[in-house]
Length: 374
Image 1 (cartoon, rainbow, N blue to C red):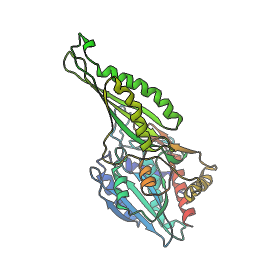
Image 2: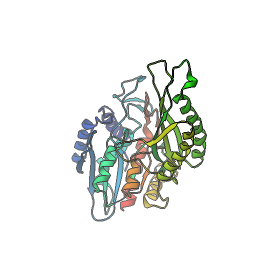
Image 3: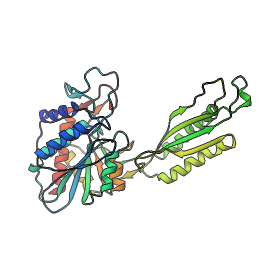
């Protein structure tokens, strides 16, 4: 199946022109649901608290294995610095500029192009599911809601269209965020020796964490202090300081082990000051790392399709951060690989996607599904 650049861009233009920042996806959900129904898909809405409903659609050819395409409908809010209207797709040669053009309405346009022509897929068995989530850019509430329904038990594997620069993501790191509360002792700021400065003590912790970050990196993870907060309206030694620390887990790391190790690392500072370590609360579960077996049929099908379209096998990598895929792989047990378009400036002004790579993605998804369902 050949897809035209104009057709993919027409879908992308409509997606970009429909604002869908996390929590405000309802209008885009309505539009995409209408498209899918007009193309012959059966569509089910999954209520998702504090964001737009997520969509689960399927097209069944017959008995046999089911495979899924995965993407998210939400974007971040527009930031300052755009040279053009972020909601009006602007084409400049091979590049298309617009909010979400890369992350990930470009991938959505490629998926929906496949969905539009699903009836022409040369499939003899099974079916295709299209999973479109909301709130991915915040807490993955949509993916969490879908996994909790347990309606995906028949699905054997899937392809996600998140942007990957045309590389094949076979796994993703996990994540946990820590909150460290440092308590000092207040005193008049003109006699600081009579108190314990919580900011100064927190600085010691930060310097130690910088050293620890190197150890974590050698295991395939990462550690970053996200914020430092303390305030006193008076001329006083600050007696409280709060740190937020991001910890991404390598694919071989256990979240439980990483949490315990982090607590032990911080415990040594209790000889100097009162300090508490907590895992920061969030409305959905933290994500664990995963890796998909390279011998999995989905991996083989995508590599086959990429060879046909690109003339080469895609480079295989591990995704640096978490995404909806973590929930579907780890909690639902569905092996998912990710391959998406090229581009730049995701989550920034003047976001763009490389248009030829969008068309290539659509062809790869289509050929991979044919291979899996032949």
